[in-house]
Length: 107
Image (cartoon, rainbow, N blue to C red; front, side):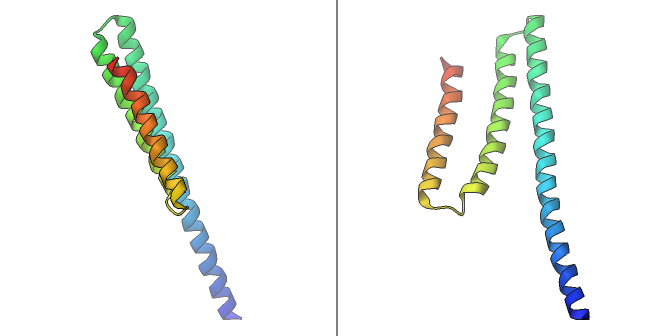
């Protein structure tokens, strides 16, 4: 009887540690979205004030890069244990997103 209680405690502690790691990932994602939103608001205020366009574009590019990095990390966590076709699709889509962000900034 003591053996079954020990097993139950072990399984509940492992499930709680798994859920706490997901909670921390969710918390980090939330704070990054807040930081990116602040960057976008500051860049909009600077544009309304009439500061140089280069500063505004740089701030928006940093915010966009942060979001792409976070989303690509989370997407890789989903894809890494899947078949090769998923990994190829991931890389292709990531390249298209990067090109889609860079081309409008250059042109």
